[in-house]
Image (cartoon, rainbow, N blue to C red; front, side, top):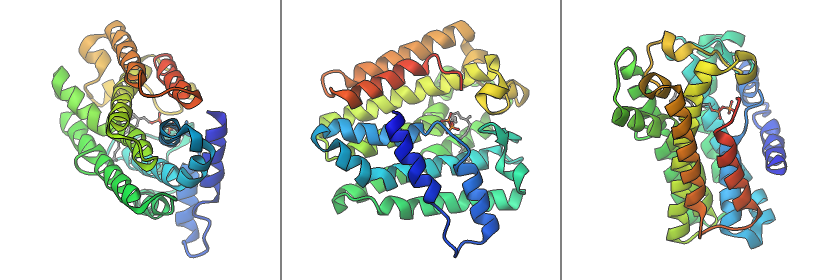
Length: 292
Ligand code: GRG
């Protein structure tokens, strides 16, 4: 995991230094991008690709790094926009002032826009056969777009102050949080040229991980410490959001998180083995106990 994170950090630290970008815009983009996220999505993309073609693991890391880091850029854009006053209105992100607090709202909007758009130019620089690359680009566009994360954010805003049921919350979470995590895993499999069965297993793993991730995020909002979590806590209840703890209670939420983590691990069984499959398993296992 640490080696993959190091590769991701190395790539991201060189991004958006170009002289053609107005300094204030590149400063805001790099401020948020290099603020120390967990880098879960690019790691998932790379580890899934590597476990689909273990004999080419090292070569794949190098070849797919621009794609994996593009996913992190999309994720960072979503956090910047989510923190805006018109959305979740959060002053703290990744342990420091949100982009619009450190800069200003207009700059934060543009930094998010540019990260999302430029992510696609980075992703096209991945070395993979053209048909696989096009399919992966399509998948990640759908995961981030209206059918996926952006659509989930819309449902989230529409749900504020309403008492959503389990089915509605599952749909909302599957789009808002799950789509990009699932997309990262599936794209890794597609880019590595995995067969249909392995691709479906990677997708299911990402889907279950996404559910566990959102449930633990909701739990952390109730039980976490802002200094450790790196963002404001007790925010969901204040903004009238439907969450797992509010719907099924804390204990049952913890149990459900475990259930989804176990299901994520189980999705890998019979399809993936070796060190990268172990990494994917340990990510699923660690999720239920995450502190940030
Ligand atoms: C603005 C289109 C648009 C979408 C926003 C990201 C998002 C959708 C909402 C954020 C709300 C939220 C806290 C969702 C829970 C899951 C989530 C995305 C958590 C943050 O991801 P981490 O924990 O963050 O991987 P780091 O900082 O580690 O990268």
